[in-house]
Length: 275
Image 1 (cartoon, rainbow, N blue to C red):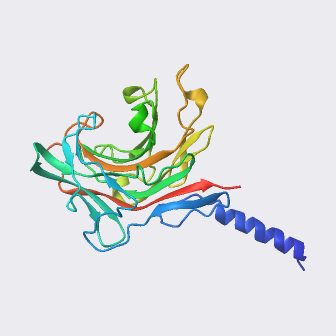
Image 2 (cartoon, one colour):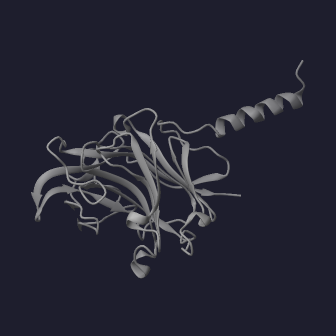
């Protein structure tokens, strides 16, 4: 007969196994006891509804310093709920305010920011030459310190012409743009555009770790920065989601690039580390 203390030990082991399983491309919440869910958007609502204005603001304009070709709008045609629990950020080939494409970019500046913790999103990316979706974080002091001094954490960047590869990067003073601290990871299951995947960073005062579907692929610490460069990641950052068309990172679309197509966002969730 198994004694009571042995049963308790087995139950504890089973619980730990459940709470430390790696994430898959499913949508279940992280259930690690040291992480507390503090902010989320599940994008539930009717077809065509704009994202929750209490959580998101639109960045309206073009270029953003990256030679992008689209004009980002605040129209439902470019950013709205799809009626099935997703946000669709949709790139379209259309003449609009001097540009040949439209798309969307939303962010949480002034509405939500956090220093450290876990930031994750479950996304289905588009595909094709010139498509550039991103899930990223920018220092909340951006308006006063400017970029790159404010810092930038690219949780997920993706080139549509390389559908199996995700990129994670850090930008800061002395390591920005083409000199960012970065690494790419090839999805063992092939194209990331074929399904939803969970893209995340876990971030503490001393390191930032990137993962895809629970598989870590990069960890950066202050000692990994270029000599003398400042670690600017001990302050709040806000969230940005966008789908660019063209730009320095991906180049322009070609004749095989399909329009319209969307970056689909199943959820964004942010966790804080607790006691």
